[in-house]
Image (cartoon, one colour):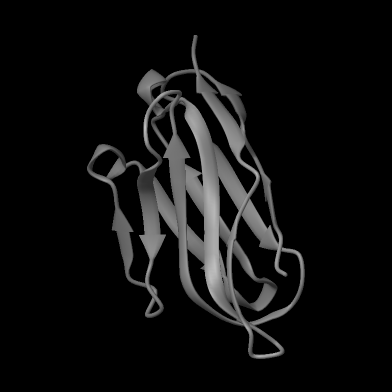
Length: 120
């Protein structure tokens, strides 16, 4: 079992920045898929940013040019740098990691969710 521990959410004014972090609870062999998603009340979870195994990023249309996904492979962490935040970015953000443990077992894990509120 691989748990994900998220940090970095909170309240920020429009135009501000936040950096979300997501760390695996244990050492893992490889990350096959990684990403950030967000959820608004009453709406389905939507893609914010993902990164392929070759480190190619992909972004949801609403965050392109403002958000940056990155990873620290050695420490099994992924990050989401969010710039020029807008009130409509307010949501619960979830990180997602899937890959192999050191025991060569597949895992597919989600973080507990972080509240991000953009408001003046």
